[in-house]
Length: 216
Image (cartoon, rainbow, N blue to C red; front, side, top):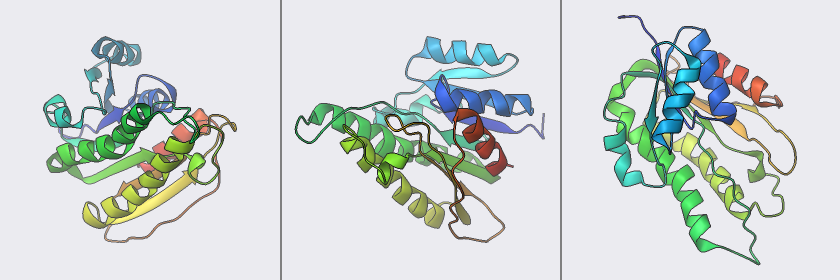
């Protein structure tokens, strides 16, 4: 179908990523979901039904991302929703877990955009899920707080280098111990640029709706 809109949901096997995948499929988009485990990703795609597919993708192994995404494209909507929970305090700091998480959210997210850059459509959007732990750290959030700060910086640099416009939309939060973060969106916006922060939206379903609005 020449007019078919395609979406790639990185981290689409559970949580907000899964909700977004189902929402975009319902509005007629062709969805690809990824997860670290190929079988789980394929199961998640099968639950959506139809022509959607699942791929294995491990963001903690950024050197393998280009090959893993070789069959994906063109891409109209990219959602970077993969996350790994981490309880890591300064007093009991696990450097291995910290390196893994920062590789996933900082290097891995950027490597996905790099791999797909030649295959983005002219009106493509990129949505990156961060977290309010960036501004409101909680016990054990040392590494995730740093990672979420990096996500905000990532949005700014990608907006400058990769897209014509940038928007930061809809900070969202679900609970103190597991805050779900901001939704940052980058998109071609007819040459307009700038960053705008909107009001909190709440739970996974409302985050999903915020993404759907951003990706129009």
